[in-house]
Amino acid sequence: MLDRVLPMDPALKILAVDDTRSVTLSMGFVFAKPRYEFTCADSGMDGLAKIEADSDPYDVIIVDQEMPCLTGVEFVREIRKRGISAKVIVVADVVSSEIRRAYEGMDVHVMFSKPFDVGRLRSAVDGIGA
Image (cartoon, rainbow, N blue to C red):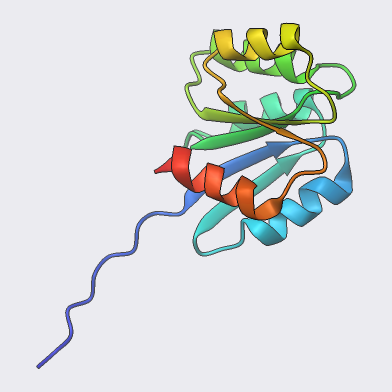
């Protein structure tokens, strides 16, 4: 009897926007192929450029709060203005209650403090990306 071959779920498409190279490098190992399609950007402006250049939308965007040029809040505000509805996870050293409220107002409900537990981050991505 032949085993039935079940199609694989498509890879979860993730964009990580963080100016700390060691953070995006480690995320690249956590979100490896074939289960994930991982892209990183080192600034909010670079992240916006990658989003604009790719016709296939990202499922999950992981963004740092403190970055040059655009903060995480400004970056998320920009993608929401452009109609991008990807799930967003914030990773930040410190998130004030004011910034937390700003993110919640833009449909961001998952926030991690740095340093973050990679297992918890992967679980969060898998949970919201499903």
